[in-house]
Image (cartoon, rainbow, N blue to C red; front, top):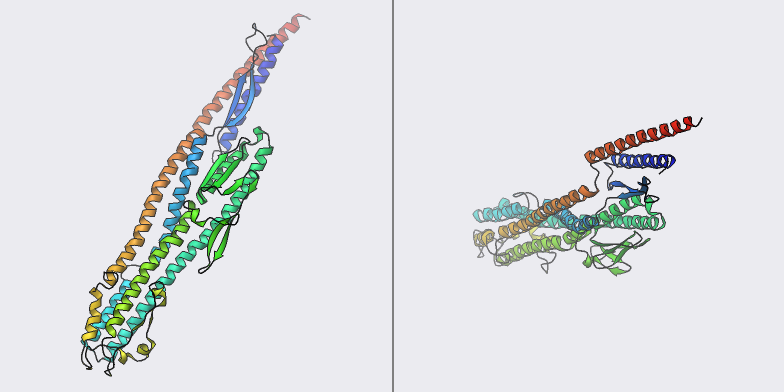
Length: 454
């Protein structure tokens, strides 16, 4: 190679090392940028012009992102499961709070109710004792109504959050479709930043709703639900709609007019659906069973007794006709509320008898709610809710750790390490300085030769 050829090769080498420093500087500048993928400068040797040439230096081949698609896919698979448990734990936690603290909720109302009948048994003719029974009976009915209402509010809160997630989902699919369009029409060298954004959007989508993500040859992503319903195809987004349906007005999810609510089993939307449509209805059924069992048993015993006038006792509770909705519909007989003397405390038509009052007080320990006592039935409901929340929290923590491990592995390939970049910076700096010195030597050599010809 001639001296002028060597001068040109060295100039290219200086440009290549400067290019490497630019890439390092860009990496360091984005060390805290979410979703940024580490860039690597690709350099290649220029082929020698003939067999007597050592080579023609170095050239810049371009810059590429250090992305491992395997780790991206693992994140797309694991995030929906982690977010499902997180959403379940949060939404079910509201139901757990609605149950109240031990000794201050329905368990306390039940205890006061049976205690009031025990007090009536001690003084069956006492107007004060009778008024206490009426007061505690109303308080028990109000407790059941309030608990049913709070569980409904928890379900409504889950539905509200679900609608918000659907809005977020549709915004992300629109964003991904726009990124796909830009990537498909841009030179490969200009799509690295777009690709980073594309992967981050797909990651967020997978957390909201379990997805299948397929990369097409032109760099675009095709995203569908687990069951194959399209969300993003090329540059087109397919929105999911949330339509209110009776009787509660809860949202059902539709894609292209097809109801996909039952198909969603993971992601944050899946967790909210699980709480709204499965867990809370189960809790309400147990609450209704408890209310129905207590009301039925109390009315049955009360009807066998006699009030202060010697008349046969009627119903104490206005019992609903079916178990479903019993807690919300439970009320106290208005006639008894207006006239406590109508309470049936006697087992015989004698004002001083307390036989029925004693039987009603003893229902506290009776197996009147599906073969168990009222206190045990309430404890079972509280335990079920607590167990569901604890299971979701435990599973969430386990899944979160797994996701974090995958992200650490991903960052080991794609993340920016300050130490590694510092080492690369020194490497390019030293190479630049060496080539600069070589350039100076060649330049001085040429200058010397030119001076000899003068």
